[in-house]
Length: 391
Image (cartoon, rainbow, N blue to C red; front, side):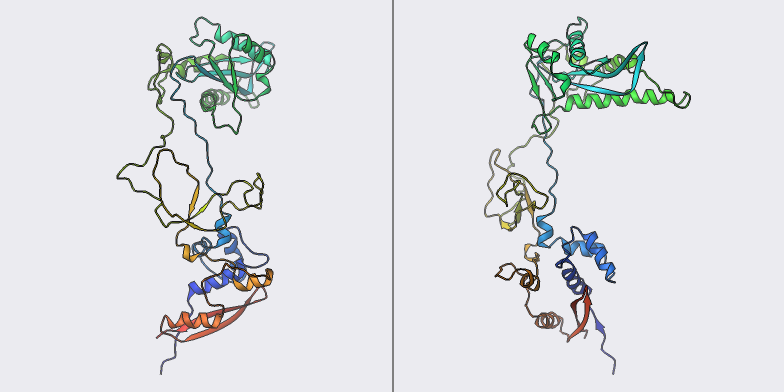
């Protein structure tokens, strides 16, 4: 008579071990890698992908899962008239350009929003008076198509105060300060700064390859105007022409930098359907009755909700949601953990029998086998593994 073969279900073993390690003090590992390391320290060789699959159904993991970053997007396609809105900023030089006794430490840059036409001047100082002198030189240059704008957008740098602010008031140019948390954007001037610096630094490092060790190339002031002219005569993607040509037009049509939000069309599939289980993104401090998000606060709602109905409309409110796949598989802290650390009643539970033996018997009966039991310890706690006799 052949000996019965004992087979331990690896999925059930992983589930029991992970529950004992995860719902423990200390425990509640922030990610699958941490839990995988804890399993290895206990002598178990579970695969990381299997542990990750188990972790994603844990209640504590779901509510602390970081949401995707929400980046504000601004489009300037509605600004079509040249010299209506300008953006300006300062570009610092890491390799100062020396011209006799003068040392150029930065460049003042300005760009027209409608046409993307650019201008700039090298400066020996960042104080507001020097910047104001550069502004006057740019706008009063008859060969420069940029004129005093209807609105100037800039950041809150101290260089754009004092003499700069008083000079703009004399020419009736309002200044709009765009801070880091504004829904507006200084994307055009920021892109101008980045692209200009990349072009000039390529030349600088090419020259430094032929210089003695420790000697640096200093040519910002020498080639700044050349590269700005090159950019003004190069085709720009969103307006479909060069900025120099766009300045000759009365209006300039521009493509939006991002896709516009629109209503769902008739034959398009609605992704969030009725009955979908979701958690919603909590507002900062919503759980604790505050307006700040603390490091201890969950990101997502503690409860799981199901979509009752789907409304299709024009620009409806769109809360950020976390779709919960197979919501019936969500696991909460086990009864033993709750009874140990929370003496009063509780309602969250795992859909399983409170008796391990009954649970194991049911598990084995589904597979037409006899229940066997193996007992061990993890972190000083009893651990029970159940197997069945394969037939």
